[in-house]
Length: 258
Image 1 (spheres, rainbow, N blue to C red):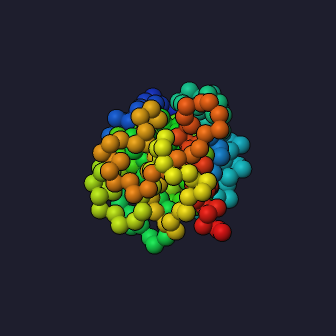
Image 2: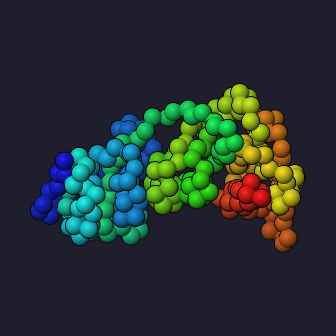
Image 3: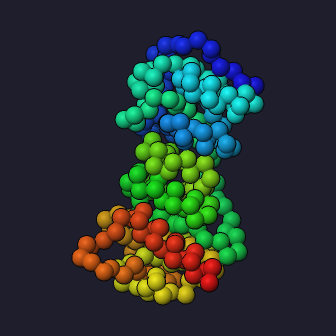
């Protein structure tokens, strides 16, 4: 059922308060909700299995997406651009905003010859969103994250993922305990290790990426079976963790195609 308010409405104070509260992790967890902002991300959302609480959008947005919306049980509020901008965390969002139910934090099985990512204390939400997008690009569907890694439902993470959050599952857990129980190769990035350009990558395994400032922690390092490095040809001392993830995964995928 497609339920949409046909006339332009003013948002109630209660709805404004709820949406603005979801900019903070405390209230996202309290309500079990998060925000998806911008037309592209919401179009991706509508193709996913996420349950949507309601959508705020302009008349133009709903008219352009009527074919997708008409078969879904979603409450839609047609509002002016100014109403969306009032509650959005994005600098420019003049089309739509969705309030979405979070999914349960569920463990997943590692399939044979599957590549998954493990994130050790990634703190920047933009970096996490970029890593999710990179994972999606390279066909990686699963990420295991330490409990100190930034919230996957952070507004900046969702925005930076460009809709890829709908296709990549993240499981938050004690990373040391998790890695202690796996029986698959565990690769980790370090300043000194085997060259990713010449490494004979395994058919599947776990790639651990460490904190933006401190790298992989000592507690996690002991579970790494192969230390790897991206060789430098210049003078900068480090790479952004998102870029480093892309470089390693690209080399891994290319190795498997040979």
